[in-house]
Image (cartoon, rainbow, N blue to C red; front, side, top):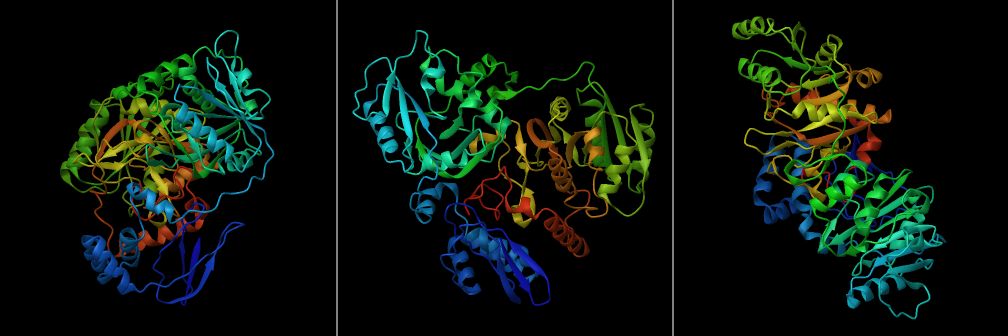
Length: 599
């Protein structure tokens, strides 16, 4: 992280991109008096150069003329943050499709192995001698010398290297026979090519862990993975290759027969994902891998055989979590003020278009004066499921939702904006199933703009300098990097526009912080405080709703913008460590743009 200390005593922080080698371009305030650098051991600063503002504007104009116009507009109106980020997004960010050139500019020499851990590599031979030869050649080039390979093959595979052995499948062969005396197991497919220091990095990271894994190039495209995300690993199969697993993590499956080499990779992947113990991600490309990922049907079959309950919306297997019988009461809390069009639609969706059987609705009215809204409230009061509270004090979103939760009775509370529209009746069922999991804190939904584009697919902490919605305004069916938007998965935070959590967990962290974050960043702060208690946050595409973001309050300008900046600085001070590295967002991906671009 770079910190600029300004002459008036103000501080501005910038998160540096990750990776073995990185380039950073930033616009420092003109009154910067001092620059400080916070970096881990082993960090080296290769080069510092100064770019002129005029030169960057010219580059922006050449690369993305429309952004240059936007940048000049932000500069004229005095929004330094947006001006800076617009320039950075045009001049310092590379789309994923530009990975080869981006990577070539950041190449580093292979690392020397610092581990003497014995690694057993498993290869299921496919009959492609050339592909097998490429993989074996990459093993012989490893800087980590302590490896041996077991080739699962019904025929002889002659090789003079004593570290290369062949094991025939079938008979009484079990997985333990493949692992042999190795302390750790690495599964590859013929044609996979490891980076020369792949095993060195993985073996070193395995100290104190039961599983380590790295990033990969598959079919020419980078697969930049998050830190450990068990739901995504199990349902989405993002783990891929290469990975290194300690023998102990496989203890439950070492006696499985080796009678089906074809699905060995999928069986092992699921077993590794379900195993217990610390996991470490090595955030660098460690292999070029081959082969198509398992089909959704094959993954569904393998998950069921492993005892995992799944559901298959749209043909994509996702994990199915139990719902008690009878279903627990869900209390839906909606803060609102005037806007008859919004509150009638939201209430209709909750009370008449939601299939969940046990609902109460708490409306916290923030001083409505519209006679039509007040009359609508009188109609709503005839429904025994509805409670309406009056809180006419100045708008404080956190105070309003805390009041609504305090007045509710449900075991699960759901915060809902008044500008939300229900699209499918099963949305609440999907969120409650997730919220009731003991290890889950907050649960978020897939929210779409009125035109069908993505509004919320999870929050990345650090995006835009503080926190932001990933892939905003992309097509609503965007799969996301690693296809993660197709299944429920862990994220650092979700928006309170639609957020479910059990009452017990809500109260355990004291609800929303109405003093520090009355309007903005309160939901992200809430999720991170749950995370600090050991609860993970989950986003699910199975709950799909429409959200006309901030339509009831309008955009932040003037005093509202100043308040937003104040709360943003407060958020940054409290959660600086997470801003430096959101575990569910790769450190080489950009924090400037809201897509999945390279920094």
